[in-house]
Length: 548
Ligand code: ARG
Figure 1 (cartoon, helix red, strand yellow):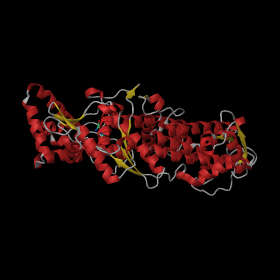
Figure 2 (tube, helix red, strand yellow):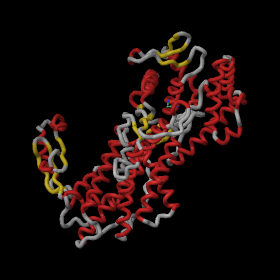
Figure 3 (cartoon, rainbow, N blue to C red):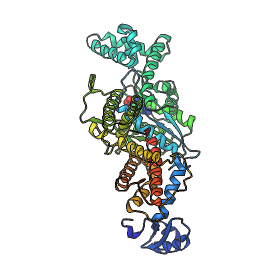
Figure 4 (cartoon, rainbow, N blue to C red):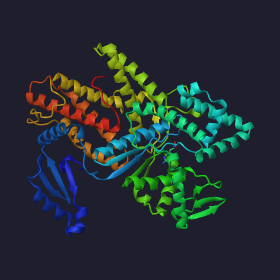
């Protein structure tokens, strides 16, 4: 309700009016009679203007909610709504032999958060990485490697070396057109499964994956399915046959296309004039494959907004094939990544590598924590410090990708990311660490669930009440994040909770307090906040630290 005089929670009865054939107000009155006295911490129920308004007793509410949170632990906000339902989340999907840049980091982090959230809601979730491991560029790479490849460099820094020879190929092909013909030959051999070309392709793929794995490990990410574009290349003939059977293929300048006028979209090319497959045809084959293999309810693609048209076309063709893509496939798009105050030793085309961003952020975090340690003269060891800095620095990057609605462009700025008192990961982590420190001092085992010391008997302050209400909203935020494919909804809730906790904490001592009831309620609040923070941070991919 907009005002607290109208209650703490409200249920509008308008939608029921048609089915029950009574006025909303009559329904509200009837329900209020039936519910009175049956809802734990609800003190009073009032029917007004077609709403059912609930008034909670603050102390009952706070003790019920904090106890429930503490006993749920990491399961807080979980549910079984997804039981027996399968969701695929396709994310990351970098291109082999190309740098893993910050755009790939965006899908990787967003996709991982969505995976965690769906898992939490009980779905059977599969993590798919649709690697860009196919296409004519592999013919060019093979040609370039045979001419200028350096094996030592390839082993030490595979992607750097592959990029170097690829760039050189393009340079030299400007004056020597025979190179392009050669590359086409190699690609054709690769498509025909010639052992030598296949061996080189596999080498490039394996080495690139090894390099990507370093980033995935750092972010704690594992995939269930690494079938990339190459995996689907031999599955396109079935798509072509199906389309032909349904009379959907049209010739256009020698290419075979599916007309999509009825969807208001440009035609989708399935086979190029030379008979080779393209990116879109491989995606259509992937839908058929995934549908058979997983029998999914939802197939989610976390891919940048520039590919929106591509997915509309792919889904439209799949619809025409009877695969019901419009009812089950979702393109979860996102904006661009920009940098406010960062200088990187950048290479070709202003590409910023995810690894560089992480390293730099961890370095800056280390400086901040070191300064803190020296000022406060704590006993934090160097080892502890560097572990904390790795976690906090990584978290700061993750948070920045998740803190706003994904369609918006992201602007990275060190000041904001590492503001220990702002809309940042360190702020959440600091709040958690602060609660843990209180709990250590109170001698309360943070993992101990059965707390007798509930407190709140002697009333609740407005600040406590507001904080507990925000924590009560955690489960709802998790659900809304899943429904809208927007982890930021959860992130924002965590930030509100952290803000509210710090206000509470700065205004009253938790442990230095005469009244044992106040100590008990303060300790329980710290326990609940640390539980909520820890569970929430883990859902977005952040590992909490105990001290910072
Ligand atoms: N590899 C592509 C790129 O880096 C993204 C692939 C997206 N997924 C898909 N199923 N098309 O741009």
